[in-house]
Amino acid sequence: MIPEEGREGPVPPRRDLLTAIGAVALVALAIAIGTYVEREYGTLHVNWPPLYAKWSPHVGPGTPAALAVAAMLIVYGPALASRLPWRLLVLGSWAASMAWIWSLALVDGWRRGIAERLTTKYEYLQVIDRFDDIPAALRDFTQHILIDSPGHWPAHTAGHPPAATLTFVVLDRIGLGGGAWAGVWCITLGATVAAAVLVSVRALADEAIARRAAPFLVLAPAAVWTGTSADGYFAAVAAWTTALLALAATRTVRFPAAAALGAGLLFGLLCYLSYGLTLFAVVAGAVLLLARNARPIPFLLAGAVVVPLVFTLAGFDWWEAYRILVERYHQGAGGIRPYGYWVWANLACTVLVVGLASVAGLGRAVTSAPGAVRRLRTGRDAPVDRLVLLVLVVLLVLAAADLSGMSKAETERIWLPFAAWLLAATALLPPRTQRCWLTAQAALALLLNHLLHTGW
Image (cartoon, rainbow, N blue to C red; front, side, top):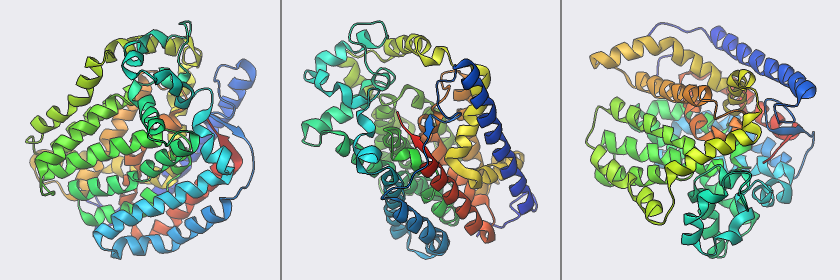
């Protein structure tokens, strides 16, 4: 068990509440100032700042299911997480996450909530027919990134390396074409994020800590966006990259070399799904540091070069594409959206994605960070210290992404792969308050999904 007082002395639940109130104030400020700026100047390019969403109160076929799933997870989640056999808990987390994501997505109905999400003018499925000759499309990919280029790509295709679009091309080729199958793909994989984070936390910290986080990893507001965008798929690749590396580095798997190689393969794929997710290299470094094991590095690197080598030989230049993308970013809304607003409003978006329970846990992590760092340096760190440091590394990576100015708005989906790890901070909350915090998480997700229509 994790003592509630942690390693630094007791942290009163009242401080958790104050931290959460501060986060609510940040969100309220982002809404108020953002609404004013958008109404007066129209420079934010979102309809319901700070989220890319429209005000649209509604209920739908998924509403009863979402309420039922939330109630069951609040009432039974903590007890089941503490008692189920480990493998059943991992599989159960995936299944419960699936139920939660599907029910929230179906609040908007099958067509609007699932089948048509990835078929809008901004999405990858708009260009499937332009990849009949895949090698030719890859060689020519960078010629269509800029807005003023002939036949320019839609926003999401232009904004990502081609592995994102190729995923849906391959699905189409094997008979799983169209928005419905694309939605099923993203939800099914996105739901595995909870299981992957559980595996990682158990390997790097311990099983008791992972079990404490399990209900929160499932009942997360992030599910609202996992079920509506391809970023849920990206989050799954990032989560399993980290999980495999954690297993390899801690040698808690039968074949650690194979796990490290698999982590490398997934990391290479991750870099060709989204340019910004190359930042997971920092998270990988933190995993190796916390495990105090550099032996996976050769296998990790061997795996990591495979996907880049394939794309490079096929004629796609990642660095050139990224350089052109930066120019494209400033041609569109990214060049208009004010940095002075989004540099802090992005944090308000993150609050809405991870929920107040995660914010309270992050407050505890920040408070205990100095002691955790000190104990890590002396080799006397405890499992909870390793969780604290992993969460804070992810937080620092997000801060770097935020300060870069390349993440102005829409971070509620763009940062999903990082947000999954912030949810793990909920393991630091006192057990007696778990159901209260789970209720807050569920209420936030239900309100967001029933009051707003998110979309890309």
